[in-house]
Length: 357
Ligand SMILES: Cc1cc2nc3c(=O)[nH]c(=O)nc-3n(C[C@H](O)[C@H](O)[C@H](O)COP(=O)(O)O)c2cc1C
Image (cartoon, rainbow, N blue to C red):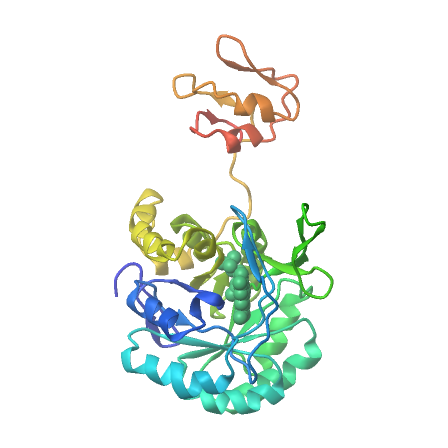
């Protein structure tokens, strides 16, 4: 075991990062890419009985956000059980999480056919508790491989939802799926750019990271020992570490690689040791066991500006909600106006401000 490795339910992962289910893991070539990369595991696109018929276009992205209208795999499950997975198994050198969906009737057929390939199963769940019992019970009846339920961020009582899933036999949680629906507009054409059923699309990427972190943190507080895989907005080594401190055992990522290209997986894994050293983190295991302090530790004072570091870029002056900052000889704070909010410190590109956060 090195200091990046994680052991979960008896399976060893060289490091905690892996792809999240989606288009980067929907073909044999793509599974091979992750088998050959440095990621800790491979995950499949969600496999269901029939091939999904996806309206095109189906993925667009901006700098921090992906919008998609994808469904599950555009190949039927037989393509996975007869071609893709048998071929992949010949070369497999890391754990494989098989994602499947969606109903108990589907699972009755899918799980016996897929179980020989899976180290873990992951099943997409929707919002209703009614479907949860037959779905989870059917899957666990047909396999001895651990089942993780993938949580939609729209489940309001997610702690109750997870408790039920665990009662029926789920062994872990993946949190969270994409957020939404959202709408993307093509102004020139006076139309939506993409969209299902009246212009709906699903939102992911760095924009949803705070929602995912909040879910992961609360799930970990409610279930101190439940295996937990985080997904939602990861884009850097620091993000991986934040999710582990919030309580995740492992971390999935998709959208950052759709936005910036798939090299980002190896880059993040390469960056992890340096980021751990910068934050004094000895190992993934020790970070995972470190309690997250829920009291903000900032000073809440007025901004103190290091004039030697400050480049007078004026961002702090422009963004200050109270117009308390101004450029005289140097950036100066009017403490009568300043509300000590922290925005200036968070937006300073050269870390020249302290005293608030
Ligand atoms: C284009 C696209 C396709 C996706 N397809 C699936 C899927 O088939 N099954 C699934 O469980 N989640 C799917 N997701 C959700 C992702 O696995 C992930 O939970 C979500 O995007 C949040 O992580 P991210 O911000 O790192 O992308 C998809 C997301 C995107 C953007």
